[in-house]
Length: 121
Image 1 (cartoon, rainbow, N blue to C red):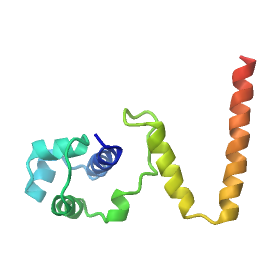
Image 2 (image 1 turned 60 degrees about the vertical axis):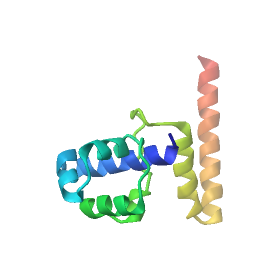
Image 3 (image 1 turned 90 degrees about the vertical axis):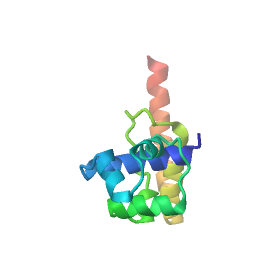
Image 4 (image 1 turned 180 degrees about the vertical axis):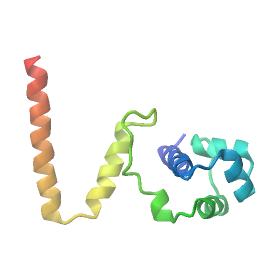
């Protein structure tokens, strides 16, 4: 199962829940079966562009909203290091060089602090 399918599925579920829609309601709006939508949300199904457009229309979202993975819940079962790294990578792509350097310095100091705390335990 690809990470992207899982991420998109989780994002669809998150947006659907925020809009207080059940799978049955989303199914009725999109004309897609609830079993299919369940598998999409679990990242077990490939989505055609047509199906994706129906879901996005039903949720009233744009592609950018669907592919914005900055809201990662570290307590989620879907939380993985690769996911976090991809989110951070995408975030940094849009930043100026000096901002990226500053972020790097800050994170380096955070990691040094974490390592020092681990050594003192």
